[in-house]
Length: 474
Image 1 (cartoon, rainbow, N blue to C red):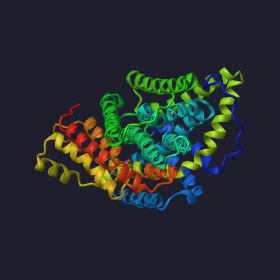
Image 2 (cartoon, helix red, strand yellow):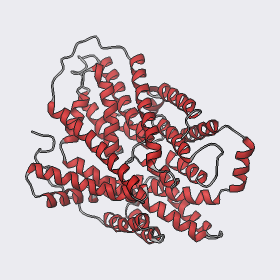
Image 3 (cartoon, rainbow, N blue to C red):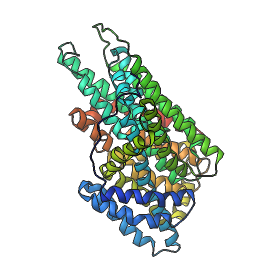
Image 4 (cartoon, helix red, strand yellow):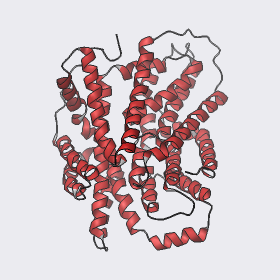
């Protein structure tokens, strides 16, 4: 049975709540803002976002609530400044874009959820022999993370947990523990490297939105090489740190699983290619392209799947998008709150920053461009260790530096520097949401998974990335 022709899953009965409907009402207004440059679009969309947060307030963690309160205070403060209304309109446009983008990604996740492709690909990756398992799961963490974001990380880690039985470890608890560590690190490192380049990654989208003069195509080739280097370093660490297996294991052929992996890679290539082509051939911004392309691609994926199953394409696609996409939008309240706050704070704090003093300080420091870029990466990393999410620190730095010239350093270089620091810290600091979630899935403390298991790798990756920034010029 083909990966796309499995029997359709049972229908869900999740109702469309007021929160989901409010987020749906926000989407066309955000689209008018980014696609048609209607500057009031974000402001008109904001009440719908407020309704969403009000209905989901009990789901939102304290830190995100504090950030939203800070956004409200600073929005009033900025109105007292010259051109404060213009700044606030820009900030509201940024604030409402990211919830819309998360909502769009949820529709893509719905298409993957209906398909049997993801599950079959995951089983193939988890069931690889020990000599190939780390590399397979690193690639899997990257692929699943691009298409499903943090949900892909949780899904693949859950598969590794269920596959890591005492029987699979030949009855030896030490082997079971070693398998758990290796598989978890492989998935985490593959997932973390998305920050370098993926057009569907929230990290790069946040940075590109903060520096709108930079095109994704300017950053992506260098970022992709950075991601490859990051994952290759992880493979080298796995080879050095872990003993080779002494017990032979028979390999099994899984043509359906291989086709599923190829299908997922094909989706990523297709989405990336379409994004690149649209960015080159149109005058629309990267954000405008993605917020329209992703839902259309999700519909296309579902229609293609329905045609292979010989069911009515449009009813199948509509039902899947509503029940597995729109109805689940309230589940992303925490992510939406943090990203919305990051978007607004990046704009307002950069406007409140003493620009003349910062330019004078940069000129007085006279640091070489590479040293300045390395300093930015280290800043994101260090404040992440202190508990500040890179969504906040990186967006503020990017938005501030979008209006301040750094001699010899392009804005694309700045984005790469911040993305590298982001990729390193999310797999190390115990307070990072992706690490907390990963540790929860496997039932381990975040400090063990981040600091003890992944610490040496992250330090080595950060050092090498810092050295690379000294010579990278775009």
